Image 1 (cartoon, helix red, strand yellow):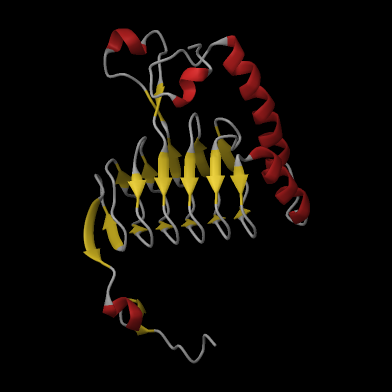
Image 2 (image 1 turned 45 degrees about the vertical axis):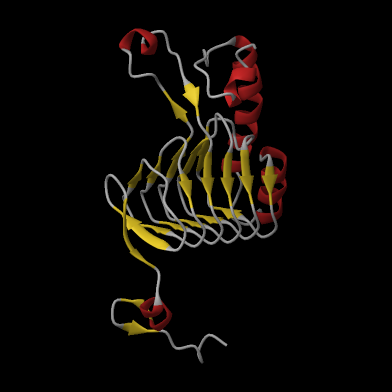
Length: 204
């Protein structure tokens, strides 16, 4: 198994390998082009994302600037995914994001890690673990999602959280480290923010 094949294996490898860097630079050129688009060039942005990502569904939108180790090459977006400014996807291996998921500003999703052993780190070794984010999630501003994490459908990750472990479906989870605060329930059907009630008539 060569270093390029090790990207998706979970094994420790050398990311400075020439074959890896050559492919990575091609992806980063496309990422540069995306970030240089004008706000009015929405069609151009979408075409670029379709060429950059492993998969990207209909009606997805990423607000530049967008940062990514591989320019989205290992990223799989469903449909209707929205990402605000400064989304960082450390996509050295695969990142999966379900339909209707929202990313606040300054969110980081990382798949890459480095060994704790100093002797391995000083040689630049790395390993990658995939991240799975479910359908209809909301990842709050400034959240950090660490390698290997899975977040279940419909869950909300509070702003500034550091997600080091899996989060189940249908919960609100916050903090550093991120912990489940509560389940999403009946009160959420009545109130959208603190004591402000949802007016379903206005939403028709």
